[in-house]
Image (cartoon, rainbow, N blue to C red; front, side):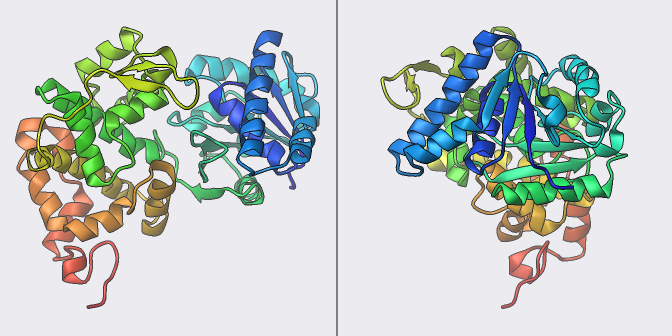
Length: 400
């Protein structure tokens, strides 16, 4: 099946970015919002994205006009009977998504594919709200959608292979990198970043300063610290994803009390002016952090924080491999594209040494519990002498 036109439900940050991306590659797209005011807000955001691209010389004014002409915004589902693919991009609340899929079923042609942009919810459960389970799939874009190349493709229990291949081909057509992921809560990237953000809050509860924890993440080579990342993404969104991880995987994803309190206080990040940090709006560019953001510990003193952030995150990546979520190459590529890792988790593990990771985790598991329990595959690798690059074999093979 060839996808010739697309419908997007939701015109927020993700929805508007998806609509913009599709229009830039010549795909006719219609989007649905709750009311005319929100429709206009989405159109305005898409227009700003185009104007920014024109200003940077990435597109022309003529191409902008052509792209905008491909976009229609509605406060109802009129026009959705024409589309070949529907992408749902509404908030991460199961009841909201359930209502959407039950409502839209009758508006769309039987052969249309339904895709959810959820970052953590089970695709098979979402598919159960429709009569087209074979044509239902996870299509998880990353923020900002017009810049990030990765799209996680997640088949549900009843998704047909034809649907998978159709969506994979479509992703390649719109110049994205699709990686097929075995269904599980949080899929792949959100699982590792969920561990990264949770560990940051556990460190905070032990008395470490936010700025030191953030800098410890940067010391590792991550593009930003866990608290800055959460402030940008929105802690309400991160919380919903991590809550799903906890409900599915148990105590290793238990949510720290400090995380719960932050979200319940409404301090969910840059979009409201305050999260872990406070922000002020600038005339141009992104909001600016205010207050003391200088780390207090030396790099050597922060090393223990870096080690803990790294080992818990890599351990989760190894679990994903053991569960068959994706293969070694795909796991590393997904985390490089979706989380900005310079090395994927498995290549990274090989470089620092599997025995070192095992020792760091094993020495702390009795104190910190399940999240520090070495994954079974990590244990097997270490016991077999597959210690990584220094041994010539770990998750990859090396020549000396």
